[in-house]
Length: 180
Length: 177
Image 1 (spheres, each protein chain N blue to C red):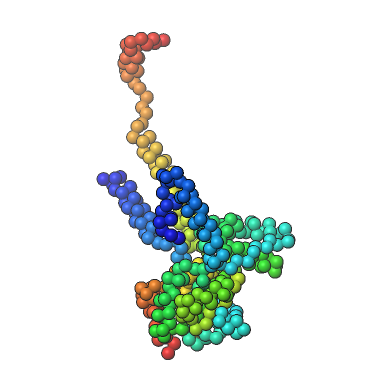
Image 2 (image 1 turned 180 degrees about the vertical axis):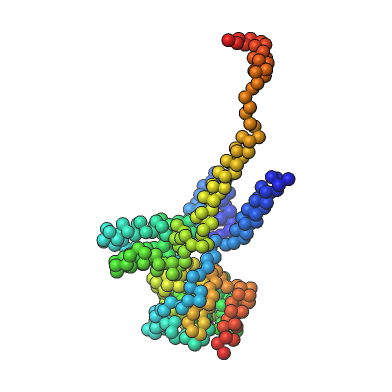
């Protein structure tokens, strides 16, 4: 794209804007014309299976799988080419009678556990799975420990008769406060 | 003293862990196929469409499989270097033309040169799935026995070539002798 033309489009119109509008439209037109020459990935159109059971299973399974191209999307949501290819592969395998477990095994053998949105419970993920519970229990322990310590520090002793009389006197002497 | 020190220590440990986390690229995934046999494929060649190419054809030598496509921008960055690496003759480089139109792929090789001994055509990405490809360019080092020894994701620039690829290739070649 012509650089000055591009700057012209980005600059706010200050001279009535008509020639600018024409330049921009022309540029847009040229860009549209160039579209067929842009090299693109070959992507087969995604054909849903005619078996509703397979589509349902795919919908459930692909929600638990990660698209590796756009890592924060599931395989179900992702518009990426790789995700479409993997969905196609899953359909083929389901049609061939493979169970969900077998399909997950097929995918993790190739892409690793990272493809699973819900991490597996393995040695390396213990901290991830159980860490929060350890923190919770640790926190509760500290809390009870603290409360107990305070209770030991502040022991309640019943007042002696003399102390009680003095306290009543003090309460009675408070201004504006009636005692019964 | 201790009651002020403990939170400080916890904070420092946490900060160090998070700092290490920040330096890591989440797109660089460790391949699970390292030290596993390379997935078998048998697909047409790019330049000679009537001929097939299979991973078995390369058995007995250390070779590179470079996943590329004409639509892949980063592949263009690495392309001139690939030609250099191929010329150096250190290791044969084979291509896996991933989800590409044949005419686009051939045009790219005409324009930029062809570093590959041959390119395998993976039109629907099925070979890519077997290799765990998730973004071109990717490069695999495969040993004499057909086992994947190394995978690099992203353009193989000269520093990567020198520091990561060459040492593995040389080590494998030495072991193979």
